[in-house]
Image (cartoon, rainbow over all chains, first blue to last red):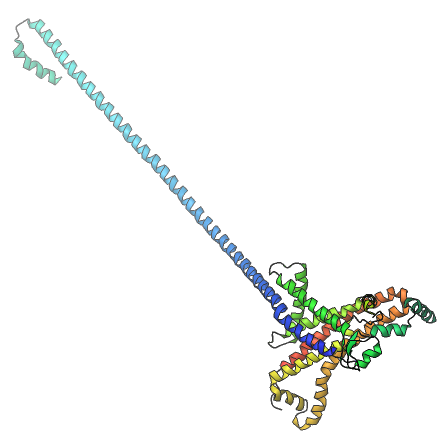
Amino acid sequence: MDITLTIIGQSVAFFVFWWFCSKYVWPLFMDIMEERRQKIADGLEAATRAGKDLELAQAKSTDQLKVAKVEAAGIIDLANKRGSQIVDEAKDKAKEEAKRIVAGAQADIEQEVNRAKEVLRTQVSAIAIAGAEKILEGSINQAANEEMLNKLASEL
Amino acid sequence: MAELADAAHAAAEHGAEGQTVQEYITHHLSYLTYGKFPDGHWGLAHTPDEAVSMGFMAIHVDTMGWSLFIGASFLLFFRYIGLRATSDVPGGMQNFVESIFEFVESQVNAGFNYKNPHVAPLALTVFVWIILMNMMDLVPVDWLPEIAMAVGGLWGLEHMSFKVVPTTDPNITMGMSISVFFLILYYSVKNKGLGGFLKELAFHPFGKWMLPFNLIIEIPTLFAKPVSLGLRLFGNLYAGELLFLLISGLLGAYQLPAHFVWAVFHLLVIPLQAFVFMMLTIVYLNAAHEPAHGDH
C-alpha cells in the first residue's frame, strides 16, 4: 500500500465531479422527469375528464332522445286531431253547401212553378174570356168585366 | 495439479517472453508513477523501486488519469444526453440514462430521509463513476498495458507499468472514502452542532457516566467508516484483478475459458461493489443528518 499524492488528487476529483453533477447533470434529468410526470398526470386527468364528459353526453343524448320522442308523439297526435278537425270542418261546409244548393234549387223550382201558374192563370182567364165572349158575343163590356176576371184569375 | 503446474510453467515461459509469472504480475500491479525523486527532481519512475523511493510525493499517472478520464467522460456524456433530452417519449440513450437516474433516486429516497438536494447527485456520481472504473477490469489485462508500452517505448519507457483499473489503487478508493468521511463530519457538525456531534461520540451508547468506554467504542466506529468503505472496494477489485493476472500469467494462451468464467463472476462484483459504496455513502450521510439525541 503506497499512499501517494494520488489520494489527494482523487479527493479533489471527487468533489469537482460531485459539484459538476449536482449543478449541470442532475437538474437536467430531474426537470425533464418532473415535466414528464406532470404531463402524464395531466394526460390521465384529461382522460378521466373525457370519460366523464362522454358519460354525461351519453346521458344527455338519451334524455334528449326521450324528450324528442315524447314531442314527436305529441306532434303526431296534434296532426291527427287537426286532420280530423279539417275533415269535419270540410264535411260541415259540404253539408251546408249542399243545403244551400238544395234550398236554391227549391226556390228556383217554386219560382218556376209560380211563374207557370201566373202564365197559366193569365192564359186560362184569356181562354175563359174568349169563351165567354163567344157565348155572349159582344154583350159584355170588356172594361166592366175586366175587374171580375182579375178576381177570378187571382182565385185560381 | 502437476499437469496444471507444468502447463502453467510452459505457458509462463512462452507467453510472457522470459518473464516469470511473478515478474509478470508484479509488473501489472505497479503504477506509472510521476513524482519527486530522493535527489529532489521530478520525473517518471522507470522501475517499481524508483516509484517506492518517491514516497508520498508521487502521482499514479495511470490510475489517476483513468479515474479522471472516466469520471469526466461519463459526466459530460450524461450532460450531453440531458441537454438533448425530451419530456416526451425518450429515445434509447435517454431512456438508459434515465433508468440509472431513477434507480439512484429510488435508492436515495429509500435510504436518505432528510432534505438535501446534493446527496442524490453525489450518489449518482459515486455509483456510475465506480461502476465504470470497475469495468476497466473486464478489458483483457494485457491490452492497454501493451499499447501503453508501445507508446511509452517512443520515449524509452518500453517497460513502463500501466495499471488501468483505478479501483485497484487504494489511493483512488481511499481518496473517495476519505472525501465521504469529510462529508460525514461536515454534515454532522452542520446538523447536530459541534456539541451535538461530540455528545454523540461521548455519551453513547452507555450514557455520560461511561464516557471513556463510549469514546473507545464510538471513535473507532467513526474512523472505521471511511477505512472499511475504501478498503472494501479496493480489496474486491484488487482480488479480481489479481485473479485475472494469475489466469493470464499462468495459463498464457489457454486462458480464455478461465478468463471467461471469472469475467462472468466478476460481472456481479462490479455493480455490487459500486452499489455498496453508494448505499453506504447514503446511509452514512443520512446518519449525519439525524438530529442530535436529546438528553444524555
